Figure 1 (spheres, chains in turn purple, green):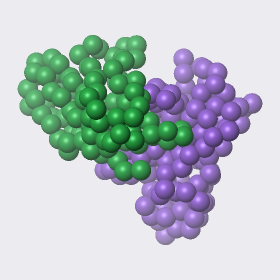
Figure 2 (cartoon, each protein chain N blue to C red):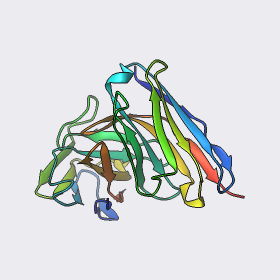
Figure 3 (tube, rainbow over the protein chains, first blue to last red):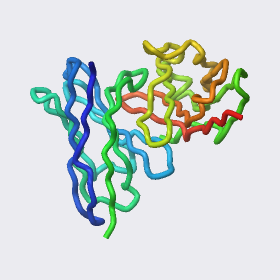
Figure 4 (cartoon, rainbow over the protein chains, first blue to last red):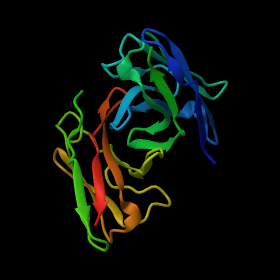
Length: 117
Length: 110
């Protein structure tokens, strides 16, 4: 059974940093691209960042480019999102997603990031 | 990358069929056969309904179907049920490990 356990969210002040983690199980982690998708309160979905299976290719939404860094440790079946210089508009539920070209077939339960002073 | 365009809301009566559109450009929807659709109930994570334009994951009822014509993709729900009331999102691959979502459509079962 595929499981994605995302964690690391919390309350952070504007300008602060957080690192999200997602531990995967039930599939060959290194074979699949992974993404972080966020959803601000009452808003739609936004693909924040994605990474290929071998970590050779990464992508970022313009809204986070230069502030967020996606990475993965295939030996630990773990995906990360380092978030720096956080802004109020980064507040959202962040989902870890197992990603195919044609769609995200498994989603984590989400971890809430709150940015407030 | 601009978001794909979806109607903000649609509605239908139980048993009817409803269709949700998702309009993009030749750089996203029109350029790849990698359109997906998601259902999201309040407080829950999104669930994949359709991938690769018209393929259903195991366990998704065949009441849900997807299609694409040019730069517009569509999700059709037939035999509408009360539990289908949810938010629906389309998504398209745009190249270089980048995906873009639609703004979402709220489906109301009358």
